[in-house]
Image (cartoon, rainbow, N blue to C red; front, side):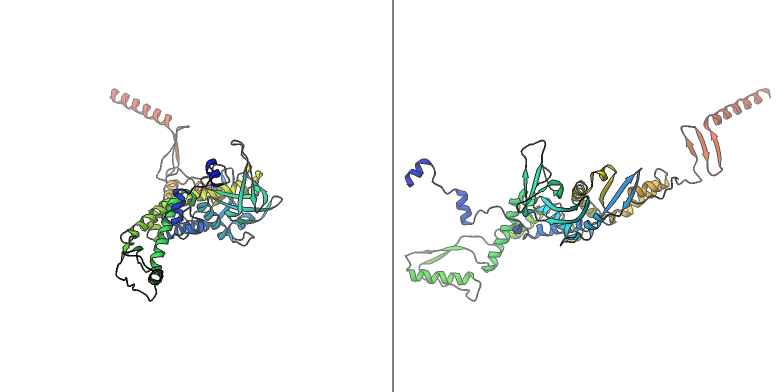
Amino acid sequence: MGLWKRMLGFEKRETLEDLLISSGLLTKSIERDQAMNIPALSACVDLISDTVAAIPIKFYKEQAGKVTVIDDDRVKLLNDDTKDTLDGFQFKKALVEDYLLDGAGYSYINRERNKVKSLHFVKHESVSINMNVDPIFKSYNILVQGETYRDYEFLKLTRRSKDGVTGKGIIEQNNKLLSVAYNTLIFEEVLVKTGGNKKGFLKSQGRLSKEAVDELKLAWKNLYANNDENVVVLNNGLDFHEASNTSVEMQLNENKKTNSIEIQKVLKVPTSILEGKASDDEYNLWIKICILPILVALITAINKDLLLPSEKNESFYFAFDTKELFKGDMLKRYQAYEIAIKNGFMQWDEVRYNEDLEPYGVDFIKLGLQDVLYNPKTKEIYTPNTNQTNNMDELKGGETKNANRDSKQSGAA
């Protein structure tokens, strides 16, 4: 039977990869729980998700160039109480964590007709997607534990997506890097458990009896167990040969630092941010390159899935209130507004529009009495200090007449 299988090519052969995996020299892809044991990854994900979750969401209506803040129950669901076991902060944090690590975060939208009653976060591993095969007119259903849902019943936050419902997370995209960092931790753990003793093998000049081998194994086990036994006596004819390097020889500490920096690069979190030593410029740059893209992705998903079609047509929209996030930049921004208002190329309500504040309804431009105003269309000149209005053409004509008169008088004399 074995000969027949070999002739047909059915016999399973062990590959080099299988041998390396079985010996522990090669590991398969690491999972999320293993990846989150890596300190640099865990710290970066927590920092990013906490920052995003702490920013409140507001509901606005834009009409005739004016923006008004609208009180809506969906804002309370997103910021405070989701009517689920998670509050608003935990809800946004969980979505961003799945977005970063797994490539997609999902939430079920519990509707009663057109009213959103509650929001229910669903773990990424509990969701599967049934996608059609048409590459142009794409459609899909969402399955949760065998139950089928339509696409509009879920809020979907996706990363590096090609279909709008599935994505690629950090763990899949950078699995080799995370695997190296994780295996470094495992190696450290082994060193601690074995007291830092090197692995190796014993060389004997003669054949040992079974009793001698068993006794030697027990002594060696006690040595690596890091207990009271710290000495192994080798009888005549036995010699120990090292088969591994120490953490110093492997430059383990330097490699750990390098791996941490590489993970921070993937998540766009500089070391100064994690250590709390960042300047205002470094913090603002981090917000712009790391946090803002996630805010845009999340608020775009919320506007797509939570707004009614009629609200989209009437210019309703959700947006993050990022004023608290940019406290370091607030002084510079307000100084720029001050210059714009002082020089007359922005109005108060235009500034309030940019800040998502309700307008005053004042259409005047602030002017100084020392300025002379010129209207290029009517060619009128107005001097606020003297309250006089002149026309540029008349002024030029008057100057010409006076010049001619003066020349005639001088000629007659």
